[in-house]
Image (cartoon, rainbow, N blue to C red):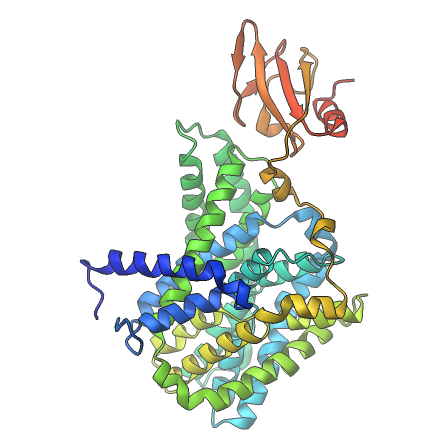
Amino acid sequence: MNLTIENIVLVGSILLFISIVVGKTSYKFGVPTLLLFLAIGMLAGSDGIGGIRFDDPKIAQFIGIVSLNFILFSGGLDTNWEAVKPIIKEGLVLSTLGVLLTALTLGTFVWFITDFTVYESMLLGSIVSSTDAAAVFSILRSKSLALKTNLRPTLELESGSNDPMAYVLTLAFLTLVIHQDQSIFSIIPLFLQQMILGGAAGFGFGKLSKYIINNIKLDFEGLYPVLAIALMFITFSATDFVGGNGFLAIYICAVYLGNQDLIHKKTILKMFDGLAWLMQIVLFLTLGLLVFPSQIIPYIGIGLLISLFLIIVARPLSVFLSLIFFKMRMKRRFYISWVGLRGAVPIVFATYPLLAGIDKANMIFNIVFFISVTSILIQGTTLSIVAKWLGVAIPEKAKKLTTTDLLFSENPKTIMREIAVGADCYAANKKIVDLGFPKNAIIAMIKRGDKYITPNGSTEIESDDTLIVLADQQRIIDEVYKTLRIE
């Protein structure tokens, strides 16, 4: 069946519904949800029972890039800077040097066991060199896996920030495959340009986005998430236009925004969480449709060999070499090595050789798809088991709440205080969003003269206002007084 304007909405909604229903029960059998989405897409495809013929890598690549924008932005918004700060060096080394070492190690192995040229081998290694943000974020969070000593922030920081490196390496080695007369050193300026411009643009657009969100006055709360989406795409496209790495820019922009006080922040975070799940489903369904299972069968043997080498040798070697100068327990290093999940991102990157029309593009795509499936199947199903076996897991009840957890917390606020704001009070003539108010306290009402005002982040506090504050602990009330600088 060919997709047309008349049936695309029906088919898409049915596939989406099936994915959600099947995904709801998948973890009872230990199967990662993302693998189910891929399977449903493959079953709906031309080789499956659905008979939908979809073989346009250009459309798949477009859907993949848009989906990765939402997934990376949502992951960045949920990244707690206080948790990330102690492990920022380890995370950045893993997302740069670790990716490079993985690409070179795996590329060398592929060169030895196949008839690929050196550059074709390195291209394949580069495509699967990064851990997948969609897979790591969704599996860790859906399993509610609590890990010791900043392990989870390390894994999420690495997966959220290492796609840019893999993207640059993929483009670089693809260029060398097409133009074999160029020197390998010619890719160094491209790498520096992508990373420096991407990082600078991400931070700059983050500050600009905060200013716009907090100072623009929109009539409806629902428009603020729409504004955030617009700013996200502007960040990505503008950075890419000037030659920077758009994926790096939107992740840094989102990390900055996620750790700032924003108007209607809770609404923005909830919407992006839902959209990230939607985009993960759409992305994996699309990639499942793009794959022809009958074409993968001839590459199962070589694909399994390469995949096992990646899981058992290339990933652990790159992690241990990258972290050699950091003080870290061996169990942590082993677990970081194991959470080297490959998912949708390598498959999206594998569409670049297809569109470039290189000789072995189809073979590379099918091998990459097989590697991603086996990685999710082998590593994704065993994250909890390996964490317990290595002793790096902690009971869920002992897990510390992040800033985002506190923001979403629905704990009853049992303590109420009326706090008078004087003319010399720090809060006077300031917006609530600019106060740095404690996350687990709320200003329920503002008494202003004879009127009661229901505030939001853009509400400006005036002198002689009385704030009616709710919190769940006296300690939080004390923090409120310190924030308002009232003795």
